[in-house]
Each structure stands twice: as structure tokens, then as C-alpha cells.
Image (cartoon, rainbow, N blue to C red; front, top):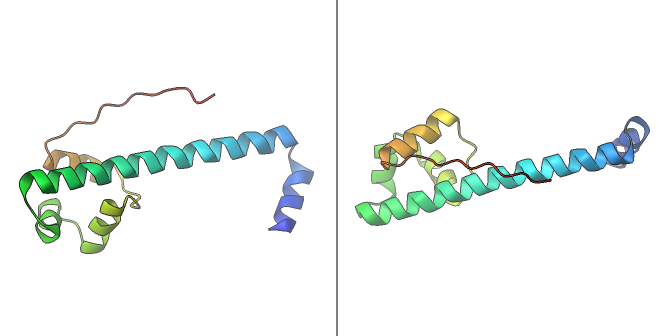
Length: 101
């Protein structure tokens, strides 16, 4: 890792490295927030429908592994899968974009 950091220091200015780090942090935070919101919605749906893990996997047509990752807030899913999950839960997303700088 030290060699990579030395390489970056030679190729990029300190302000550019700071900018890249900030963008990476923002990207991580956005992904983590979406993952957590999906997990919360799945838990609420399961409680409302009074269904268990296997029934939810069947309804969503997902493998146990994929559903487990979704419920833990660790899945990196496609927009298509995201839309499918919302459709099964009879939900529509509401997006709001805010400036982070």
C-alpha cells in the first residue's frame, strides 16, 4: 500500500487526492444508505405480510444467498432487481438529490 501511496503522491496533487477520497466516501455513503433502506423495507414487508425468509425468497425469485445479503444491507444489486423488489412490495422510490459539498 505504501508504494501505491508513493505513486499517487508523484502523479497527483494533494488537493486531487483529497477530492478523490471525498468522492469515494460520498459514493460509499450513498450505496450504504440505499442498502440499509432496502433492508428496512424488506423487514417491514415481511412483518406486514407475516411471511418468512423462504416465502420472501420465492416471491422475489431470489436465491437464499442474494436475499440474505439484501436483508443484511450488503447486496450490490442492479436497478432491475431494485425495481423488481419494489414492485413485489408495492412500493415506488422517491429520489431526492442533495449537494454534498
